[in-house]
Length: 639
Ligand SMILES: [Zn+2]
Image (tube, rainbow, N blue to C red; front, side):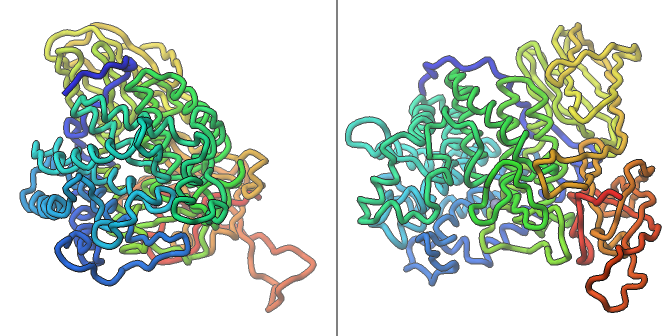
């Protein structure tokens, strides 16, 4: 182990999720569902769907579960990534809730991987069992390092949860092999995986080992991306192929069309982009390279200013699972993959560790309550891959998917969610998210016990308890959400004027055991309108309250919500419905709807429909498609 030689940025350190205990309320319910239902049922699915069969290295390969596609890729090429992500999610739950039975399941997978690993450290079930001669010949299409990256993230999480080193050692040997194979040194390949992921995993490994080589390899992959001559061109020619035959035409699909520091528009496959930018933020944090942070900062503005759904979903198109032109945000056909929204949380969280700015954490919160959470059902075992903003009733959640990348991704996010709440420096404590919890942070050498009592997100009042073990002066930085127009703050009952800088209010004082901060965020129902460039949303309005975006479902309204017209000034009432899918605030009010009167059987006529008075009920978007099938709409027509 060697100390890093590069200067690290003075960044914030997250309080570990195992030190944050949800105590009732919104996130306790979801994290318990993930621990008790999602993690065990996902193992069942992986087993019964043949994903774990690939670990039988001693047997001849079983028939393919997923056929080869025109690109040459089978979804089965990256089955390793799915159980890697499952191990990561399971490990997060293990850290605070030991479970020998679950550990035994992970140990079994680890032993199979260890047995299958080649003498030189190479580890990928597809290539070892099926096409050993083809390893490292097609980084453009075949996800080799992506799969290893997810195994490595799983290994890091499992080590941190249990202290067991076996999986970490197996994956460290795999990384040694990658270091021997790739790099700028003569004789090595100057390649990088087209699906980013290994970079993030290498930084996590580096943070455990302190091994400079792990950081250097991640940095090499980030820096090499998009350099000329294009690696994927040369690689294709070595395979005897014409690079111009590439199915996605150009390398913007993989953010490899130009060097990363020159990129100003978020392009290509959405999950890949989010993983790359997360890695760039990580490398910036570890090396002090602010040019990478500056590129990320520009790209974050481009994404959130021109290419993000109101729900935090991203990547509108099915064809490239990603971005098209700016402001292209169709609702019925929105791709908005769950994984992409999950990964936006990864990226925003990392950005806020480098620069405390509510722009980043507002979007982490946005996806948590909307575009990422919509990817999992309330029962914790059904999923969406695509998160549309309008449905005619044909979008149903599935138990498992042809390409099941999303279930384990949303599981690992929720299972580690505690680590998104607080970050620290020796004399600062930043509070990013609100929700009932108790936590323990360490500032310098002082342990600070924290508690939040709140019904957030259903109500904006938070009682934050702060109890350092000994009196300590530090700056408490409280996120004041960008959606909040009116906030109140008091310390031990005394009103404190609110001054907000980059989305955070600061209270610097000597804190003592038993101190109490009260924060109140007004949560009126907001009407949101889209920029006129977003032609899909012209004449439409979305409803949002606090961090929660709402939608209308046919099941609550008795008619397809596309018929509704909401008057601009119409009063909207809020009420907590304890019986709605675990309890949620619903919105309701008066509106009009296009009626059937006088139409007979006509398809067209020369007079518009009569508008009939009606009432409507809207529910949180993340809860949709948990009851009977029917229409759904986020962007309502205005009368
Ligand atoms: Zn996915």
